[in-house]
Image (cartoon, rainbow, N blue to C red; front, side, top):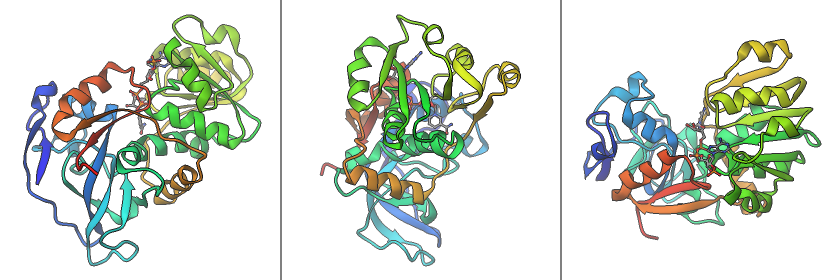
Length: 311
Ligand SMILES: NC(=O)c1ccc[n+]([C@@H]2O[C@H](COP(=O)([O-])OP(=O)(O)OC[C@H]3O[C@@H](n4cnc5c(N)ncnc54)[C@H](OP(=O)(O)O)[C@@H]3O)[C@@H](O)[C@H]2O)c1
């Protein structure tokens, strides 16, 4: 099969479009014919060796952990999927990824693709959608009527978080640069603060939950806007743990889990028109280097997707 592989850590030039062996599904796995794959910041972080785990230092490595496609084959132990089913998934990062024509994924990490959107739009959902869902609801315990501040609201994770929080009935405050203010209001944000022009900590107070996708000083400053006993949930490294503790803030970082029940719930929300995935740029698979460079710039609205099959 054709795939993007890396044989060493490095810049975008280490991404090679080449022949790779087609995976064989293990007994509990599904072989997915990949129609499209999402591009996420973790992809270039692994390519550069910034994020190293035993599983991501094994070469050749196929990057990408976000897929929409069709079941090609099932392992003998898989009963709930069959050849031809349309599926989407955030496969385990400890294995080869989705920048390829086929990927083998554990059946318990696969959900049914939303029926109302094509594979390109569906491919941007699993990783970012699950991250937003788990941050707000599983870890953040967001409830209707609460005030949530979403930092980095116009990105892949943030654009889902704004919509999920609004759907839940929360009061949603978002941060972005000026060019994304109207976009975020249309997604459902009640207030949008331009992080380049105003300091959110001078305007906000008594926030119940901060959902942070930016980190560093932005995250550290957000402790000031939380009410005593509030929650700060971050997709990146937790900062200033001492200050959080002093203010009785529950601060938590987490790693996204591939939960099919949540993938199915998100698919239902998309099919009922309540949530709209935002894909701002689509590349072909062999343009992975360009796509990752754009991701690394850190100013993409919504998602970047690589198209593998032209539907
Ligand atoms: N823990 C996990 O399991 C997990 C899962 C997914 C993602 N992550 C991490 O979470 C982070 C976000 O991921 P992502 O996919 O959402 O990234 P992304 O799509 O690349 O985010 C880009 C967005 O960030 C916004 N942004 C940049 N600086 C900002 C600032 N200072 N304040 C507010 N917004 C800012 C940009 O908006 P403007 O153009 O308006 O500046 C842009 O829309 C990454 O570090 C990623 O690695 C972790």
